[in-house]
Image (cartoon, rainbow, N blue to C red):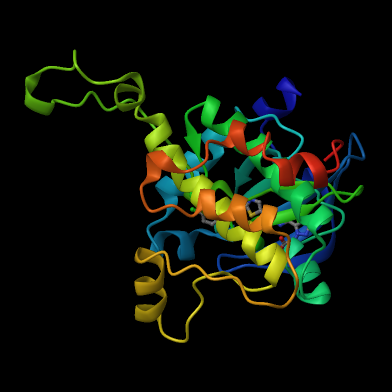
Length: 273
Ligand SMILES: O=C(O)Cn1ncc2ncnc(NCCc3cnc(NC(=O)Nc4cccc(Cl)c4)s3)c21
């Protein structure tokens, strides 16, 4: 609630539980806020490492952006606090944990499960883009699942606000179409590409442009060297959707609201998400 996001939290406000995971910058613990008994996830980041990697500004931006986002498919960041050595993020607890572990366990998802996740992600991204926020780091590692199996986008560490850069193209703006002046659609389409990659990986268990060497992956991406293996068997409708998202020309990628009307989503996604 509003009070919670303003309160000055300290470690003493929480009972710390089991470790949930360990990331590059620190560990995540299950925790309970003592007064409310509210269960949260507490991410502990070491200031030394944040300084070393010069990501403090990114973390500040994440906290700022996340404090304005409220969506069922976006993991809440309730607040933060710090002490001498560490910064603590107070996060919504996603009871079923990391989606990529589930993908590794199942190898790949059914079309219904994949479409349900893709539709939830599209709705969350439509919400973010409506607030001129792009995530820019949509991948299985940043997706968590709640107690009912619902998908939660986490870790806005790479998200940005897309301010409307006033283009000074040859001095006048008068002749630019709305989407160019807005400059949101153009930027926001990076998340559409990533969602297309994710949809492919949900269905095949590997991302489409995977290669042994970085340089080969880079080449396959810029050439959009997209092909669909014969196994597992995937419907033509799914391939059609993926092909409309993995388009090099960003303004030509299928807009997210059109994705929600695509036959593959309409016929396979569980409306409750
Ligand atoms: O995922 C797991 O390991 C385990 N797990 N299991 C359940 C569960 N429930 C909630 N959260 C979990 N994990 C934390 C997810 C995050 C959300 N937001 C983040 N933000 C961030 O790390 N920002 C950040 C860090 C360092 C530098 C910079 Cl610039 C930005 S991490 C959970």
